[in-house]
Length: 74
Image (cartoon, rainbow, N blue to C red; front, top):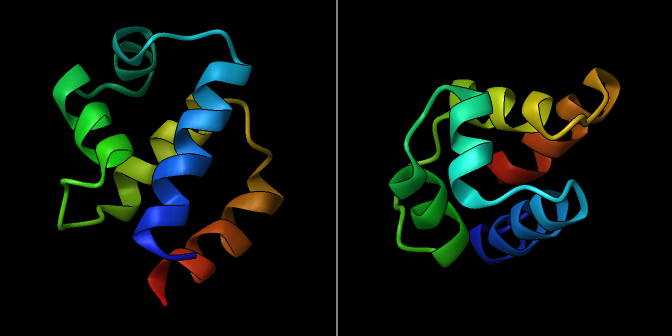
C-alpha cells in the first residue's frame, strides 16, 4: 500500500466509523495534527506502532493488521 493509498484508506475507515480526526486521535492516543498529516499525505514517516493504535481505534481486526502493514511497508 502506497502512502497515497494509506491516506485514503485511513480517511475511509475513520469516516465509516463516524469519527472526526480529533476523536480518532484521542482514541489512538495521538494528536489530531498527526491524523491530519497521515490523511493529507504530508507525513513522510510511517510509525507502525501508531498505525496499529489507529487501526485498533477504528475497529480493524488484528488479522487484517498484518496484511495492512505489510502492504504499507512496501
